[in-house]
Length: 517
Ligand SMILES: Cc1cc2nc3c(=O)[nH]c(=O)nc-3n(C[C@H](O)[C@H](O)[C@H](O)COP(=O)(O)OP(=O)(O)OC[C@H]3O[C@@H](n4cnc5c(N)ncnc54)[C@H](O)[C@@H]3O)c2cc1C
Ligand code: SF4
Picture 1: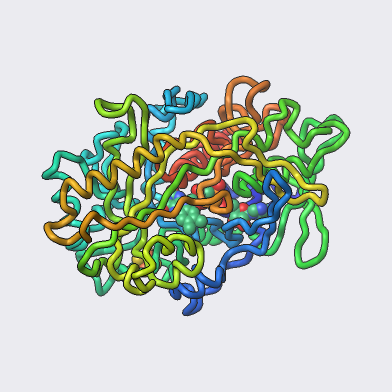
Picture 2 (picture 1 turned 30 degrees about the vertical axis):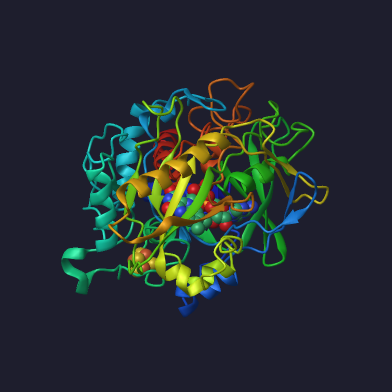
C-alpha cells in the first residue's frame, strides 16, 4: 500500500489551493514544499531588505540560452509566489479561452471554455476573499455571483485619476484584490492598508495568499501532512512507466522517498518542467510525460513594463493598486490587435530603485531617488506574450534550469505604453500636476522577472501537442497531474494567480471523484 493517497509537490497558488480542496475528504495527503514558512519579522515590511537586498529571493542560479547564469526573482516558501504577490486577482476574459489574433500571431484556444471554468472562478474568489465591483470593467466575463466583498476604495489621488479617465471617455474600474481589509470597521480589520503590499510579504497575515487562505486551514485536518525544506528531485515510475510510484525528496541534507496513489506536481512552471525533465528513465528517455517533446516548451511570463509618471506634486497614496483599465485589452476601433491591461502597481519607494529597478532612474538624473518615489504615480502594463515552442525550459549539464526566451508581441507593448502616455496627457493627470511635457520612467521586466511564469506543460486534447489532458493529468501516465501555471496554453494579459487557484479547485473536484471521496 502507498504511504499516501495523494502527494502534492509545491504549496503555492496551485498546490496550496488543491490541498485545501482535498483536505476535508479524510484522504491521506502529503504536501511537499522545498521552502520553509516565510519568517514573520520586521524586515517583511522594509523596502531596503525586500527589494534592494533581495531578502526573500531564492539562491537559485539559472542559465539563459547562451549559458550565462542569472538569479531568477523566485521565492520558495509555504504559499509560493503568493507570499510576495500583489494579490490582484483577475479572471481571464472569456475570449482568452478561445483563439485570439494578436499582432505577432495567434494565442491558442484552451481545451475547456470560460463557461467550464466559471464556477471555479467563483469558488476561488470566495476562498481568497476577493474584493471588487462587477460591471465596471468592459471586458469582464459573465459571472454567476457578485464579488464576495466590496472593492478596496481609491485614495484621493487615484480617485482623481479614475474620475479624469472616466470624464475623458475611458472605463477605469476598481481592481479585484485579495486583502483582508474591512474599511467599514478599521479597528477590527486584519489589513491595515499599508504601503508594503505588492512585492512584500504581509507581516500581519492579512493578504489572501495561499499559505494563509489555503495551506494553514488544510493543516487543521489530521490527514494532511506538510513537510517543509523538502525538495522533490525526481519521480520514479513502475516498470511499465505508466504510473508514478515514488517521489524522491531531499530534505535537510538527506534523501528519502514517499509513495502515493496520485502525485501532483505544482512547483511553478519552470520547476515543474525541471522536475519532469530530471525524471527521465528508460521508459521516458526525454523526461517524464515528455513523449511529445512538449515539456518545458511554450514558456510565457507576460510582456510587462513598470511605468512611473512623475508629477509636480507629491503622490501621497499609500495603497495604490486599486485601479485597472482594460479599454485596450482587445482589438477595437483604434488598434486591430489587442494591447493589454493597465493597472496600478504598489507605490514605489526609494530603496526599490536600488534593487529590482536599478536602470529605471537613469533617465532622470536631476531627481533624487526619494524625490522620484515621492512624486511617482506608478503603473504596471501587461501585454500577452505568445506561446512559442522555442521559448523553453531545458536542463543544464548539472541539472539546473536553462531558460531560453525571445520576446514576442513587442509592438502592442510599445503601443500600450504610448497609449498610457497619451491618455495621461489628455487628462492633464490632474490639472497642473504633471511636469511640463510629462516625465516618464519605464522599466521593462527582464527574463529574470519570473513572477508570472506559465506554460511548459500545457493542457490540451491532443497528446502530440500537449503534456496534460483537460483534467491536467499527464497524457502518458495514469496518476500524474500538474496544477501550477504550467498548464496554461496561453497567458492572457491579466495576472495569472486566480486562474491557477480556480483550476486547482476544478482538478480537486475531479480527484475527489476519482478517489471516490
Ligand atoms: C512579486 C510578485 C507579485 C505578483 N503579483 C501578482 C498579482 O498581483 N496577481 C496575480 O495574479 N499574480 C501575481 N503574481 C504571480 C503569482 O504569484 C503566481 O502566478 C502564482 O503564485 C503561481 O502559482 P503556482 O502554483 O504556479 O506557483 P507558486 O505559487 O510559485 O508555487 C510553487 C511552489 O512550489 C515550490 N517548489 C518549487 N520546486 C519544488 C520542488 N522541487 N519540490 C518542492 N517544492 C517545490 C515553491 O517553493 C513554491 O512554494 C506575483 C508574483 C510575484 C513574485
Ligand atoms: S496592505 Fe494589508 S494585506 Fe497588504 S501588506 Fe499591508 S496589511 Fe498586509
